[in-house]
Length: 165
Image (cartoon, rainbow, N blue to C red; front, side, top):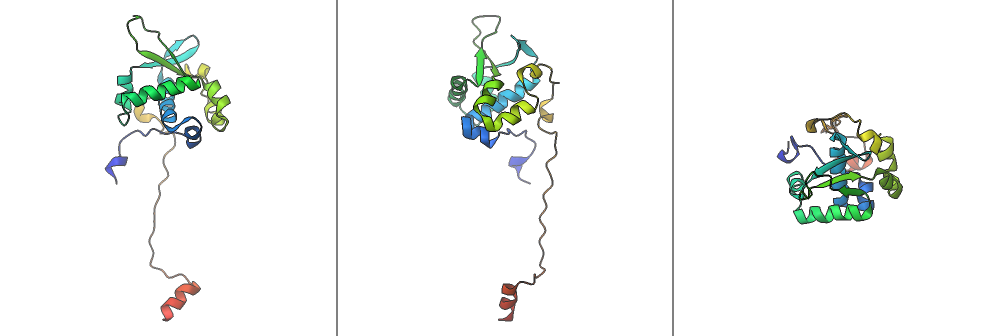
């Protein structure tokens, strides 16, 4: 088994979402969504998470901080990601984030069913049970794939002609 595919939680995205809003944006939005499911910070009837760009970089080591900033700015400009500052100290510039699920569903019709029918509205996020990271996305097991190799000849006309020569 490949060492690149073992013991690590994957970041999963919907291809249709990536097509509509951009690949990096879909990855970031999925990561924010994951943390919102585990957050207990409810402010103004929305669930929020907070992170510095440096902390995002620790989660997404494959991106530079510049890429993370640009991706977050793109999501904010598109209106899918809402940012705020709810820190006690005004000197603390750590950004808080939430997803505008309604806007996302309205703008990205092909993803509407996934976000709204999965029970992931803003109001429901605050009542979601906390899930440890190692359990994330493990609701359904990955089906086992096996490959069988046989040496049995099939009765195919072409194969029969080759064996006659």
